[in-house]
Length: 345
Image (cartoon, rainbow, N blue to C red):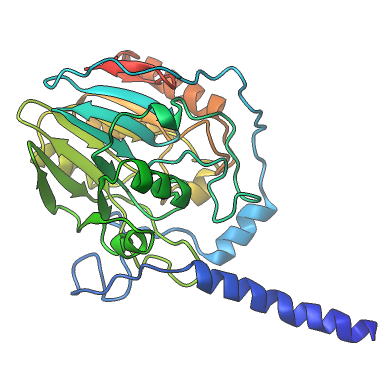
């Protein structure tokens, strides 16, 4: 009898995993073949793919993660924001890759996540180690949301549902992600391919190539696109890099969008570098992006909130500052923002 129970479990468990993987998959893009889409899956401009499942096994086996602890002292803004001047860029770091950017009368959110975990479930998965730097209820009226790709730390269903209910914004997303958004009740969704742009009142927003991958389940790997964004007005240019590994594509951004006034660049979730390299930059590579695109000012992101790799927030910040010192780049040129603080450029 026990043998039959064990056999039943051995058969049922993989079937359950496959079923969950199938259920979570979605948003597969269908469209014409291009230089970065073979009709089924997208590929990176660097030519490097995310590591295989075989490499995942090695990564799990050899892991030596830094310790994390919940930051109880992190500032959480619970007050109204100052009025933003149209000609300036006003921004606030919520944390992870979520920024509130205010410019030319628009209130823009990047990859918004207020959930306690970046996961399909709120009882399991990577948990938040610092609170969002702005209470959700204190958001101004949001009219634009930029989504870089479909991973759970960048496309959070709970937050999107709350934005739909309270703000009903326009979403700009990479190809294929619009299918997911519409299932969640998003009414205004614009999907873009790399280098495509959309005029939104007095802003022109362009989807920019990145080196990453996409998936929400087991069967949808690279079936939707990933990207960064350039936001261009009459007097300012903003570059939100999104999630990315390093590659030669950043030089093109400098050529197409000179000058860049402000860039938001990832620095975390980079260890071990042999495994994370195709999809996440190191702090040193983040500085390379800053130099490649000739950004007047850059701001660090994608660190210190969710334990997504083997580095913690202290390691990412320490390595960033060490490399800035080595290159004689001031922290006023490439800064580490504090949550909940309003900055102007």
